[in-house]
Amino acid sequence: MTAQPRTAPARLRVGLPWTGLVLLLAAAQLALLWRRFYYGNDDLLQFEVAQRAGLSWEMLSLNVFQHVAPYNRLAHLLVSLTGMSPVAGLAFMTLNLVATLFCCLWFMTELGLSTRRRVLGLVLIGLSVSVSESGIWFDTSMHILSALAVTTAVCAAHVRGVRTGSRRWHVVAFVLFVGGQLFQERPIFALPLALLADVLLLWRTVPWAERLRRLWAIRWPIASLVLAAAAIAVWLQAFVVQPGGTTPSWEATGRTMLLALTDYVLPSVANLPRSSPSPWTVQLVILGGVLAVGLLLAVLRRGNAGPLLFATAAFLLYYGFLKLSPLLIDTPASIAGNAERLHYVVYVTVPLVIALVHLRVPSIRRRPAGPWPRWLGAVLVVGLAVHLAVAGNAYLGRQWAQTTEARAYLDAVRADADEWSSDDVTLIPLSAHPALGTSWAVGYVRHDKLLPLVVRGFTPQDLGPEPVIIDDTGAVRPARLVTVPGRVTLDRGGCGGSRAPAGEVLARADVARTREPAFLVVQYRAPQDVEVQVVTDPGRGDQEGYFRRDLPGGERTRVVPLVDPDVRGVALSTVGDGPLCVERARVVRVLAVDDDGRCREVDRLGHLGDRFRCP
Image 1 (cartoon, rainbow, N blue to C red):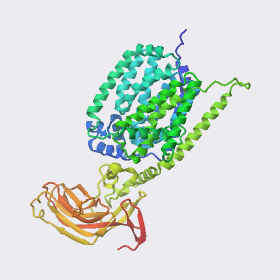
Image 2: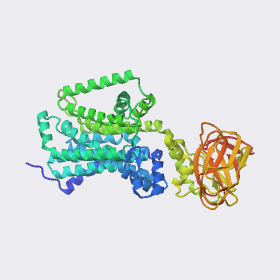
Image 3: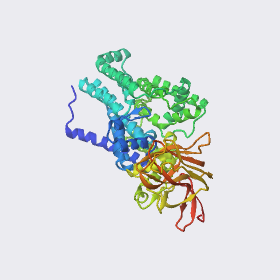
Image 4: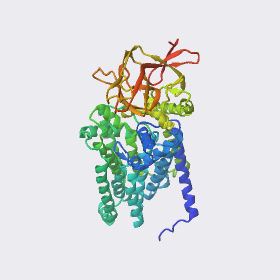
């Protein structure tokens, strides 16, 4: 007798509790991330391109560290319209998280797991610290959580097609598989995961000969996915993978995988990743213990071998991918850094948890007291959820303290936007909280680069009587510019109506050595916009500051930041042959002015020094 399809009211009664659980877990993550969610690094690049190019092929196809993800780029475009509002980013993050949880629930349902096991799986995934770490940063929340959602959706649709024999679901799986490239390249791993789910989870108690026969029966859906995967791989190699990149050695990859497994992947199931790497001898002992426990579970209970092999294969699949990563290099710091990144762990967390909730413990003699009461299971799950939330909160507070400060800084900057962007003041650009931009993205945290992303079209005005700065807390403060002693030489070749030759130095300053953030104040005339080149300490072999900047046409006085922590000389020249007359130039440093009129030294991040009488 075939089961009758559920009526609409019956489906509603079944679906509402699951929807409530998913939304509750998403709300818990939202509470954990509400004051921690931030924009940084890759986000700033995408926001800049979004403002410059708008909705265009350049934006949608932007290659960011070998990720081409139109969905991600479109979200950055929309968020850029809000001036980097954290609420807008959190809305996208929550949407992706809810989609991921629903797809995980769908996958576990198709695999035939009981209600209790699905609840346990959702709690472990929904409150996982690896999910939190993927959601705390906008860029990862867009391309990792969405990739997890589409990967599990492909697996769920495929398994449903296998279970029901319906070709329609195989078509759905195929469409999701191909469309997954709109989110990220890793949904291509849905193909091996779906086949592993068939063989090791869905048919885990079936003899191997029967498993192979069933695989052959679905050869055409599998073949279509294989062909699509091959086409995707060719496309990625041709248009996404950047040539010339180095890849790590097998030794470095293996050491990273061992450290990740023992110190981060497995402990993260309980939201207890290590705060520092353990010695390799301890890692080997842990690995041996894990293998021993897995072997024991497989021997003592039939059907456990499949889930254990599924989890192992998923780990090898995702972490073996690091062998192709240009971000992993053969140094201890790089190995530790890649191993501890829970952005990588989360890809394994989902299949690992789904495998774990399949496991059966060895049979125990019948207890005379009868079965466990139902309420006890609920209490245990609630207790687990509380532990995961508390442990996750502690981890985020420890591991992401700097970015949490950066988020508070950006909130303060956005709140005071009307003040620092006013035409009545001149903002002297410093640098924002360093956690907003690290490594290659350091240049994006300079105020002249960051603030136009907050207020579209903002540019510091001509130097007026009211200069201000933004300090390290994001607060706006009055400022004073003090001339640095030294000698300034001007070439007025462009002041008689003629054009100065391209590259000719129009202003040169040799000043007393200064370690404070320094600026070049240029008073000039130009009939049109002109691009200039600024070099600091041109007589030194190693030049910290070498950059170009556009100066708007007209009679103006502009403040040009000198991107150098140790300025002793400056040379300004034109890049093209545009006419530029430099009438006056001076090197200055900036001081913050308190309400009582006393001054403070200021570093490039806006940290304030001791108070003293203003010069």
